[in-house]
Amino acid sequence: MRSLWNGAISFGLVSIPVKLMNATENHSVAFRQIHVEDGGRVRYRKVCELEEREVTSAEIGKGYEDADGSIIPITEEDLAALPIPTAKTIEIVAFVPADRIDPMQMDTAYYLSANGVPATKPYTLLREALKRSGKVAVARYALRGRERLGMLRVVDDVIAMHGLLWPDEIRTSEGVAPESEVRVRDAELDLADALMDTLGEVDMSSLHDDYRAAVEELVAAKAEGATPTAPAEGADTEGGRVIDLMAALENSVRAAKSGGAGGAGGAGGEDGEVAKVTQLKGRKSTAKKTTAKKAPANKTTAKNTTAKKTPTKKATTKKTAAKKRTSSA
Image (cartoon, rainbow, N blue to C red; front, side, top):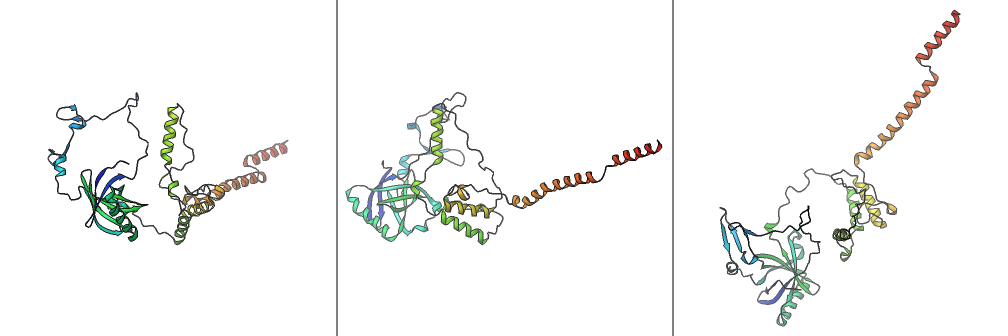
């Protein structure tokens, strides 16, 4: 792996020369911007506003825009001259339990490698001290023109460092929680606990990016001139529905225990049947709908029966007229 930064870990009076390397990589499918009409590439060009001409990367520097709109040039020499002790040092400031670090602060992950043979002994000392204490190290370091906060921990036999966001970079959650208070029953919590127990174990290495795989298949199909297949029908895309929570939880627990169709990805029933999540209003109105269907049938029957037993008004009038004509004759 290529190193991004060379420096040292400052551990009290101990200095450990290290190299910093990315611990993660991006596997997302990259797209290019194109002109939809003819498929031509659309590129960004860097143009100087004063000269109205395109400039090369070598001609581009940094500048800070002041409140009045003027630009203050800042050179790499200016930044290098700043009195920052962490410019080439990962300075450990504290050792704390791992649960003291808020996961919201976690950012990019790096590996730290001992830089040279003399660094092996102090590197190993810090690694084993972290292992035995069960703690993590909180440190300051500078990278890509700014000072950052980091957390050092042991991964296998390597010291890894996670970049951390500064506490004031985490937004408050005010206004995010639901506004109306909802009471959750103990029975619902018990079912949720049961579902959590059935889905509690997973081999993290078995998880993969289904969306990326689908995009790659789509690209391959279109490259061969094939027509992409339409998504399967029947997927529920309605948002904000009121659902029968108890039925959904019960079906999910049954499916997870039986390893049926809804085991990990959705609510499922027995024998692999996908459970249907119904609206609360639907349950109450079922009886009414059934009665409504039967009622018209009863009315119709009643009408037919009455029609057989009681002659209509027109029929009675005709019979009376016929009797009068017979009597007259």
